[in-house]
Amino acid sequence: MKTILFPTDFSDNSMHAALYAGMLARRFDAKLIILHVFTNIISLSLEPQTMNDTSILEMQLQKNALQNLEIFSEKVFLSTELPEVQIEHLLEYGFVTECIVEVSKRFKVDMIVMGTKGVSNVFDKWMGSNAENVVKSAECPVWIVPINSPLTVPQVFIYAADLQEDEVSATKTLLEFSVPLGASCKVIHIQAYFDNEVMLKSGETMADLSKEFEGNNITFKDLNRKEVVKGIETYSKNQKPDVLALAVYEKTIFSNLFNSSITKHFVEESKIPMLIFKKEKS
Image (cartoon, rainbow, N blue to C red; front, side, top):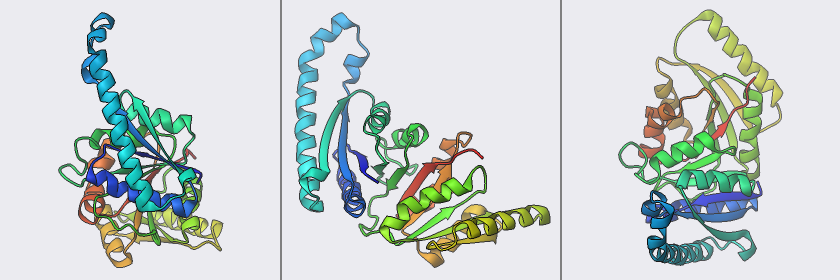
């Protein structure tokens, strides 16, 4: 992990997530790029000749945004005590999601950290569709940090595997995050219905994964529960994870992920950060 991108809207909740991102940057010895995207919605919708009339307004918006970004970045710098060479800020003009994804590719970042308020529909107005679209479009993992989540180094990751597509590569990605943090990983698969053939196959898959990653600080469990979400919740209450990890692939319906009771429980109620990354096809 060499570069972490943190988009901000300058809110108090965004500051909380920035401190979390700073904590990760310290542990990974990574550069932290603080990004703010400012947009003049009016000028974006006007014809070129009309846009000239809004140039003064746009310049003022840019000036204000840069000032706020510098103030925000200074607060993060002082609060996280990151070395000056490990933190920088960047101001971009355009649409939020597109800019975040473009910057993440331009700087080849290893992860994006985003904050949430944990209000209606889990994500506030600014972070809602933007967070969903960033997860969908970004090539790198996205770490979602709820407001009031502990600002402590994660010690336990729970990865809810669905045993679809390439779980070996997904587990390797998980370890890329957990190992530098000295954290343990618990990979679980919840089987929601009882089918002897399916249960046998999933059991064999988990056993193969356990053998593949023998010697790592990671365990694998295949569990049978009436409901997947309830199963994850119950297991998590006992294990008390610091991060819930999910791997998604192209056919995943991202809106279902973000509106699901899994997200509602972990992000909105339990204040547990979520690490979401892409899974390769088998």
